[in-house]
Amino acid sequence: MTEKKQFRAIKGTRDILPPDSSLWNWFEQTAREVFESYRFHEIRLPIFEQTDLFARSVGAETDIVSKEMFTFRLAEGFQGSAKDGEQGVPQAGEQVSLRPEATASTMRAYIEHNMQALPGNVKLYSVGPMFRRERPQKGRYRQFYQLNVEVLGQSDAPAIDAELLEMLLVFLKRVGLTRTTLYINSIGDKNCRPQYVELLRAELRKVKNSLGPDSQRRIETNPLRVLDSKLPHEQEIIAKLPRISDHLCAECRAHFAKLKNELKLRGIAYEENWRLVRGLDYYTRTTFEVTAEGLGSQNAVCGGGRYDGLVELLGGPPTKGIGFAIGSDRAILSIEESGNLPVLPGLDVFVAWMGEPTYPAAVAIARKLRDAGLSVELPGEEMKFKKSLNLADKLGARYALVMGSDEVASGTFTLKRLADAEQQKLSEYDLLEYLESEKRGTRG
Ligand code: HAM
Image 1 (cartoon, protein in one colour):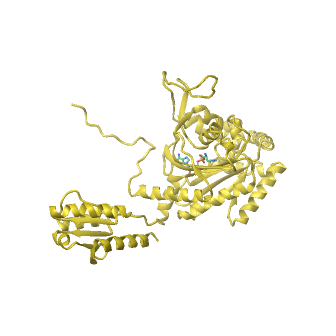
Image 2: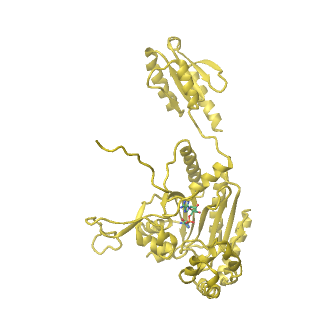
Image 3: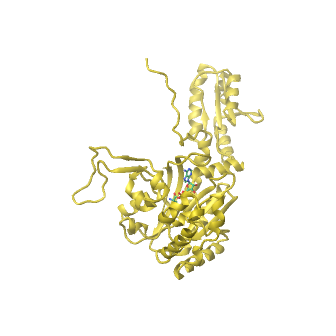
């Protein structure tokens, strides 16, 4: 006999059950509607890619790539589909990783499908799970979900940055996330950042012994990341470090100033945060984050920024780009904590039928109501009316359609509103008419 074994979801992963899943669907559907109103289109991407794609774009030294990826090898015997002379096709033995984020894959797809030939800016969004081996806690999972948005093209006009932020805030407001703060920064570009990083490194070396081991290591690997530190005793030291805003080149300073004007034009409130450097290497100039209430330490619901040159770094044509990703798990958690939940469609009609001769008519009316867009539950076995109504109540049905031999004989239906037990007798035509218009009304 095989041993009885219970299975559990793997640490850091979780099931999203009903009714939460309805909230998730509504959240993602709202995103689609808002994004499409700004002419974004969906791109569906693979869940895993060559590890090197993430190493090159996100950065080999970042926490995400150096510590957090789920990586495995393509089995020996894996057939790459490279044609003669074709480069970059994954081959047997090569390392691949579950995607820790979606920007790298979007860039790969943009290059692979020559999307620079498309008219205007290429505006893409994707929805789906990401994987990072982080220590799980509230709002932090190993499989989590993002709404990822990217704009690619030839222009780096600050208006593009501002419109993207406008769309982000329109979406957050639409889903009821209003108690949020938008932080912005400019981290310079390849002309001014290297000098700043060297200056920062030199200053950090002077205070090295007062810093914790992570920051000490980062002085050499990535000094900007020291600014991200949350360690209480490092805060005072960091506050005295040179700020990038004082070391931007003229172009970056002008870009940032224009961005702020564009935000004012749109009535968008923001706070500048000179320490906002982000944990991914591809950013240049604009960076931003949105925090929300009710989330404890994992309170960033969105992060993003500009990444001009990333497409080129991955072997594509010179391209400007900017994007963001919303962490859906955290955003939904914050909506739930605020108690500001939407009214989502539930079960409209429970068909309470009794008596075998009634059954065919019950099947037929259930089909018609469903065709009319209503959600209908039809029990597969006969139940006493009392039991049916009880179940209808527990399932949260708005109406019970009571069908016994009397109703079938007279060609009418008894419709009972469960909230107040009000009943009416209706012909089939009137029933459909009534429920359809009533449903339209509840949809607002
Ligand atoms: P990111 O800041 O690494 O940026 O992630 C964006 C958001 O994903 C975070 O603000 C957070 O809400 C959510 N998130 C990240 N890690 C976890 C986790 N372990 N559990 C739950 N939620 C998490 C990016 O991923 C960039 N690719 C964004 C971007 C797009 N930049 C330009 N285009």
